Image 1 (cartoon, one colour):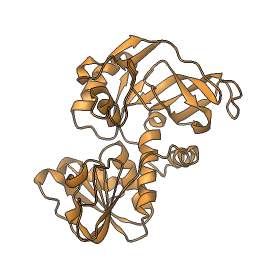
Image 2 (cartoon, helix red, strand yellow):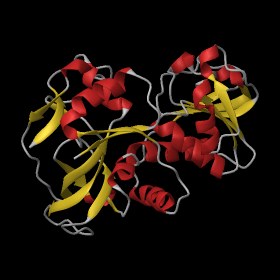
Image 3 (cartoon, rainbow, N blue to C red):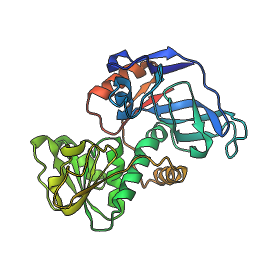
Image 4 (cartoon, rainbow, N blue to C red):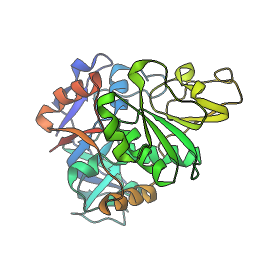
Amino acid sequence: MRALVSHSYGPVDQIEVAEVPTPFAGPGQVLVRVQAASLNPLDGKLVTGAMREMMPVEHPFTLGFDVTGTVEALGEGTSGLAVGDTVVAAANGTIAEYAVVDAASAVVHGLDAVRAAALPVAGLTAAQLVETADLKSGDRVLVVGATGGVGAYAVQLAAQLGAEVWATARPEESEFVLGLGARHAVDYTSGALAVEGLDVVIDLVNFGAGIPSAVLRDGGRVVSPLGGWDETTFDRGVTAEYAGNSGSAEVLRELVDAVEAGKLAVTVGGTAPFDESARAAKDFFTSHKRGKVVITF
């Protein structure tokens, strides 16, 4: 089969579509014929080796962690899904003609392929961040990186809980984040963020000391999927907590249902056919994109 791969750690220019062995479904797994998959910033970090100490990869490395498609085969002892089901899931190596998915993490759905592929990793990460932030109605929260894949979901989920949301955005993207439910758009291109006294910062951009803790009240909290801090990073009683992607099929089901009901918007910044996926990936990793970029098959 063909897949979007990198053959070694190095610049994103080396990414290409190449022939690799077709995977097979093991126990508890399904083989999915891919209809669409999306790109994440993590793909680029794994390609370049920026995260090789934390997340080493084997080469050739197939990009992609989101997938939607139809079940082609069931692994031994796999139950709960049937051949022909259209599923969405977070999985490894999904920008390929076929991908292997853990059956327990897959959700049967009726969404269009593009929106489905843009949902799993970013949506699950945003849901985990908002849960970890323990937001309550009236809490004042800043989402840094609000126009990206995770950030666009985080703004919506926080606003739906009744939080007062500030969202970073370029001036030309202010209306976009306000449309997601943010109460205030913050221009991050002008230097220091003109906001203070917040309860929580959900930070999707900075590492460690780069996190804008000065915008928080004394005793405020930073929640991030990035980490990079230690006990000396913050003062004034500000604390930080890491929150990753739970990968919960139950939460993914809730997200799918919310999209189907029109209660959660999926932001797609662009699409590209699989044959053009190498170009699309290089562009995604080197430029500012709103929401997700989806590869279609």
